[in-house]
Image 1: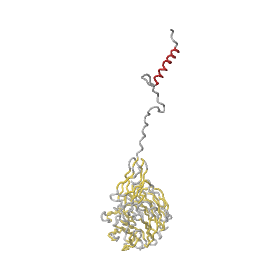
Image 2: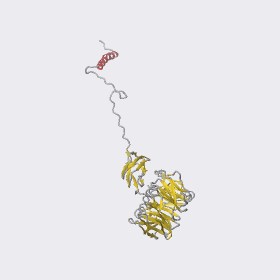
Image 3: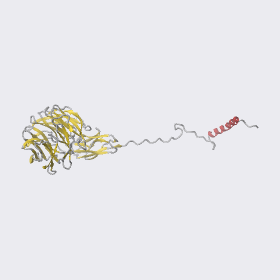
Image 4: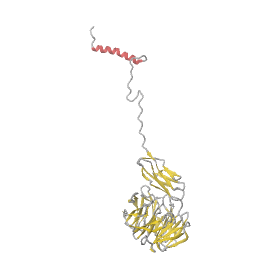
Length: 473
């Protein structure tokens, strides 16, 4: 038989193979050919591998710190103007909401304690840096209101004394006045409330020291006439109560204060040039002194062991001149300077926490011839006494930026003539102006929400030419 052609042999092979393949796929039987289909392109027809796990979320970090000195209930803190946290006792705290890395935080006091005290947040603004924040410090003042007030009266050569009632009103103490050996310009109390110091710039020039007894009665125990310069116009005590500073003859004079008795030690006086001023302000931790000199503000670092102002100062030129005063708010991040004549200007500065150097962050208008100024103890409001417009300018302080916003209703009339200074009590509820022109002291109630002033009365000072009014517990 002749061989089959190639095409025929291929057709015959296919005819035999196809039925065999179909039979093996058909059901049942035994071993033979088996066929497994390829999985579909979309993963169907078999168990797909599980999807990869999502990456873990970015870490978040808690914000907190410590509270010290809290005497009562009612304290509420906020972070970034929200996330309220009620605090019932001293100790550590942490907000419920954690923050992303590199997120900003800002801790403020939303509600002060029900006790008569003020709590202030320090080291309270910053940026999360890859770790929990636990460095915020909330410090609360000693509970209790001011109980006594004292005015330095330029034209009567005396101090007048007052008792302070629960509503902030004043009544003459017994005795009501204390004679001085010259003309006083300024008066201040030691933070302990046990000593009072007055500067005398005409007559027997120097600093007179009194002891304040528990009933508010004064007893003179020192009259320092050396080591304070000629014509001392100012005496102030740094916030920790360790050193006193007097401005006289164009210099700053530092005096030691005995830690036990509160007595001034004139033999330790140290003078530093740069005190061509009538005022001096401190940061709240006693690290820096700010001295306005008409055309500039000099900044001194204070040696923490000796209290000596360290030269050279870091000057900041003022855009306008005139009478000036300076004050730092309680967190120590911002300072404010009143300057100018008619009208005046209130300048705002940030404080470098290492050097004390000032950097301008803006300005707002004040009244005519601003002179004395004060910041309330919560650090939320600043007040300026305007001598020639007979009123008080008032601004709210932005706790994050230090910027100033006018308090509704300001300026506030003092109801008197020529306010020379403004003083805010230790609880932030009352303000007082010493009105040189008509021999009165104005008493205001402070709205603790808005900072607005409500005049109670302008009462007779009981003496002529009140320059400054000091309060103590």
